[in-house]
Image (tube, rainbow, N blue to C red; front, side, top):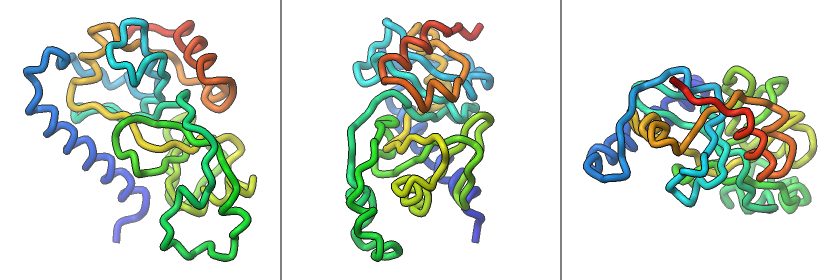
Length: 214
């Protein structure tokens, strides 16, 4: 049996491959431009400009966690969905924490991470915390296990965290093409910006410190 971290990586590889296949059938769309691959896009904020064509991503800030020749993926950090009860985020058949009824009723803030894999929960958090599902990405980490979700509800989890539903992902060269159309710029990842401040303030600060990849 594969270790949890490898399983997690294979899940995202599967997502990118399937997304790539669907994009190949729509390459002739006027909205798709395959750009030149830049590996250094990852480990940066991807920040929507005023030229962003897709209304879903207007004034959006995304942490780009991976980018290679097969595509890219990341998590939106400034689109709050609202407060959601923990019991509404877990499978009703999950009995591991049946003794924590009070905790299950607690509401926690949930963010929209993107339009792909909308039924999965990702916890973006500070690096001092690690669970069996945690993968570290330079300045930040991602966990996906139920135990961490309960720890957050009990105020025992990672010091800083965002609970995010869904991801943002692109097929080969798609993100770079959108950047060439000036829909996105890059900005250095700041952990304080991820976990603190209001949604629109995050975008304003990220766009102010943005740069264009040449």
